[in-house]
Amino acid sequence: MTMATESIAVGEIEDMPTGLKSGSAFLKPIEMIASVILVVIIGLLLMGVTSRYVLSLPIVWIDEAAAFCFLWLAMLGAVIAIDRNEHLRLTLFLNMFPERLRGFFGALGPLLVAVFLIGMLWPASEYVIEESYITSAALNIPMSWRVAALPVGIGLMALLALRETLRAAKPSEIGAAAVVIAGAGALLWLVSPSLPALGHINILIFLVGLVAFFLAIGVPIAFCFGLGALTFLTFTSSVPTMVMIGRIDEGMSSLILLSVPIFVLLGCILDATGMGRAIVEFLASLIGHVRAGMSYVLLGSLFLVSGISGSKVSDMATVAPALFPEMKRRGHKPKEMIALLATGAAMADTVPPSIVLIVLGSVAGVSIAGLFTSGFVIAMVLLVGLALLARWKARGEVMDGIRRAPLRAVGKALAVAAPALVLPFLIRSAVGGGVATATEVSTIAVLYAMIIGMVLYGGIRPGKIYDMLVETAALSGAILIILGTASAMAWALTQTGFAFKMAALVTDLPGGWVTYMLVTIAVFMVLGCVLEGLPAIVLMAPIMFPIAKSVGINDIHYSMVVVTAMNVGLMAPPIGIGFYIACKIGNVSPDEAMGAIWPYIGALFVGLLVIAMIPALSIAYL
Image (cartoon, rainbow, N blue to C red; front, side, top):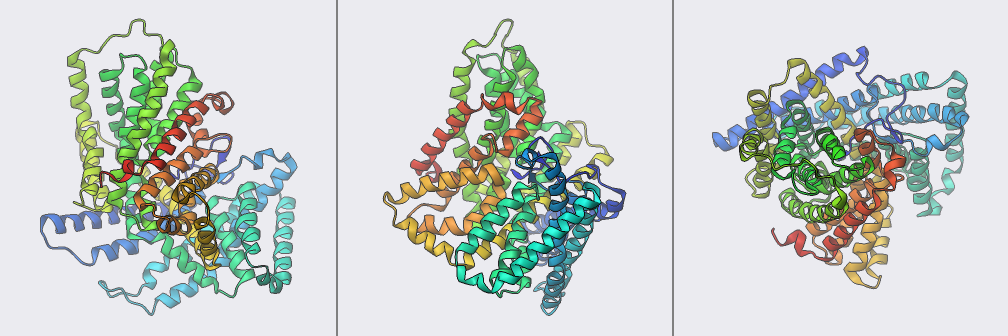
């Protein structure tokens, strides 16, 4: 999560405590339902593509039906993610506390999640009642059928959060946590009449202070935002809580986001079929014999594989095992390889089909086609910077016995990799050329990858397909619930008028758009360290993008700077989540790799400044 926003239990990044990664038997029916819904969505989208482009008879109700299914997939996926402990959270600070306090916070975190979900259950039910009076335009059925997913999902998540609370802590710790929550709630209720008079100080108290506290004690990021927004609206305003449910629904339900679970599934297919490995082997046969050749192969593989999977974790997990043994044999130090892997994954995050770009386009109202075209070029700029550094680093590389691969071997590797190599360019050209939407292309890409994978790359066993569907539902739910709660918090923030005051402050700064661009880089690098890409975008895009437009910055150019800055922060230790994920995948201690990554972070930062100061790099090809 990008993932973009991807969750993985490593050192400072862990999931909610003590659950079973494989999922519990209690959730098996829900996993099956979510898998069926995902298949139905793909089927509907394929039907829509076929009817529109092959038969020239568009079926008007397909988007509506897919939207109905999508919210159910998101909520059931979020339930599965709680059961499997796949909601992203930060435990860097939690692990610094004494063991006694860790036990208390281990009870407080899941209990806070349960309190939030229970608090949202009745507003969600009211929302369903309100929506029952509205019928859909094409299917002519009550909209309550769609939004009923909200109370169902919230109720199931609340039960699982309570279960995790009982599993994670001793009764005495649970009792202490309950007393603290009740006491804090009572105190806020007593002082609530005087809170509106504090004005924007409430933003610091609730939307900054409380959210930062929840993040520090290990509450999953999605629920940090939800708790911050809920307490802010409850104790400082008269806004009904049902409005927050509406914001969560809106944040999760954009049709553009339909492509997110499809591209997540595409990444799973990439791993299962070995299509990514075929690309790696072809590049190794082509340029692996030159000095720094394997570093070039690693960077090039991340660039091309990212164009298929859209997932940083999938990219790194595909590339590292295939290349690291040979790189070690040539004298590369493990810490240098991890540094190159992490920053290479950050470089490739703008390569289509980047889930971060899809979410950004949805939230900020920016053309997905424009983002895909520009993202490809921007990634190449960063690729050149990292490749130059890698060449300098490899000046002592051991090349004894390294020979150019025979032309016949290169041709054979190309023949095997060609069907996989076609896919990233197909995705970019189809979306960038306006031939099809990102959602349509994602569906076609999944069908293509399944057929090619089964015919040419050994196929996928049926049990593995089911596992991929469940994993896709869980990861998609974890991503989308973050988008929902972050949207609610962003809406609460904008209602205070803070955005207008910030805009006025920025426009008065000397230096015009250049100063604002530098401020943007600083803000998103910090947010990238702590929050990862997707929640940072959803929180800040409604505030930052209008200001950027007011000072004359092109939306596409600004988007490239935002995403690149977040990725630099994401890979920057000691907090950057992506850095620890790379260390886990490469099986290298973070302490060992931490010193080696800074020159590579520096190369990315130089590339970021070049991108920020030369708008033509982002928009000249549009």
